[in-house]
Image (cartoon, rainbow, N blue to C red; front, side, top):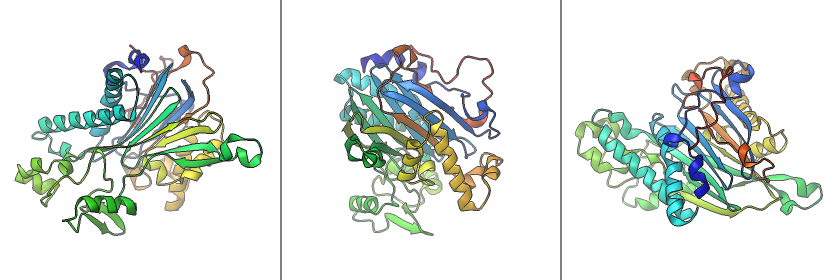
Length: 389
């Protein structure tokens, strides 16, 4: 991980204002953006974003260095502030803890998640008197990290990482060539019965900790995800109790204890050359429309270049089908109104074969803070390339 230090963008983040996909290739939809293909240490990757909300609440980043790769997908809710905060701070903290502990590990990643949460809560404590809404802003947080042939996947919330791998261990024959889906993250969403049981077990004295309203399960009738960065009003009830007006506006019932956490579930896996083909990391805007198997099938059967945008388009097509409108109709709908058809969608496809490029070709990417504000690239330097130190 020491080699990553010089590859970290200034300030922990780089807001790229446009990309080489989406509007850059003449596509009429001004709410999509992509990086068709770039190199990382273990192969290549593709990124795509579709904005639906008035302010883009998804953020994404790929930090690529000769010896390691970090990928983050952050799906905000209640506003974009938490996702943007994670985008600025999490990778820096991972690198700091890795440097202190001799490299990447599950413990390092968990510490970085915890430190990010602590920093965000500290910011909220200073800001909420003038910006009370910041108390209710949060973000799901999905990270994949590769170093020394080991893959770590850490998750809070319901973004998801799905591996595409060869069936039967990568041997010969038609059946061996089939690519199957293997989910590497756990959804922390009370739509899942196991998650509902987990939340209920933590609150045995509250029979209404999870409520079903109009067919949708929510914690205290408010939120579906059980883990996140932020959502301070549901994690620090003492702060709400100290201000009756805040209590009434945000959470009009007393909480005995926190009802959400920021402890990630972490999967560690030794990569299997020849068997593990690619990893799809995406916000739930994709998974609301496509199954794990459908997404893996699209990637396995498509050219690499632009494959993340293929997944975004497939999700939009499915959203159009559900709403019984033509896909072309969705492409004309403005931000904010488009949220009635689908959520913000962010996809990173990380191919896991050996990189054939030299170190000088390995390049990181920060997705735009807001797709709608992108301007055409023109003849300027590629803005998807972070400023390196």
